[in-house]
Amino acid sequence: MSKNQAIIFSTLLAVILIAWAYLFYQHWQMTSLPMSDMWMPPSEASAWLWIDFGLVYVMWAVMMAAMMLPSAIPMILVYTKICAQRHQTSHPYTFLFVLAYLLVWLIFSIALTLLQWQMHGLQFLSPMMDAQNERMAAIVFLLAGIYQFTPQKNNFLQSCRTPVGFLLTEWREGSLGAFRMGIKHGSICLGCCWAQMLIMFAVGVMNLLGMALITALVFVEKINPLHHQFFSKTIGILFIVWGFWLI
Image 1: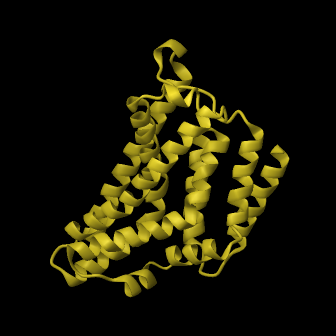
Image 2: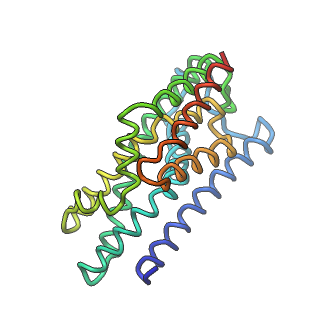
């Protein structure tokens, strides 16, 4: 690993650790503080205030960074290496690439926030953000499981597994090019992993074990050898079986 890559890797690791520390703190608050001292999303959709939307959005945004950045590290390090070979410094371009990648997930967090708002209104989620409707949880697992077998999932996953191939075909010069490439890679990752992120609604939004398992699943899927589908299909079967078991 070059010096540039080591700096980028250390920075990403620090961001990931800070994000997970925030999630641990939020989980500690919900499991340790008295009900009267903690904030909880309103049960009625009409009772939500802007502060409620803001707090839920920050939670999802941090969660997406904590769960998705680890699997993006191989792509980011390869991009850093190529930039260092083509330019005197790679840091500004890598920063823009990572920022654009995260921007995709920050926008997706808006959709997750609005979805959670509706799920509280429909009584699918408890004030503690736990699933309280087994049918809804089953639908989420079945959706995620079925998506594992679709051509769209496979195409997105293959792109995520080949950093060099992505950079060769999508390379753009300059700062704007770095930003556009980050957006493209983030969009591919979103297409690959959006259904897995929805599983948090089924296992409990602040379920730390669920976050860790999905993070590991996403990471292992992306480092698997190209065209090796056994792991992804096995996970899809487990999701489907879990969904039918809940029904």
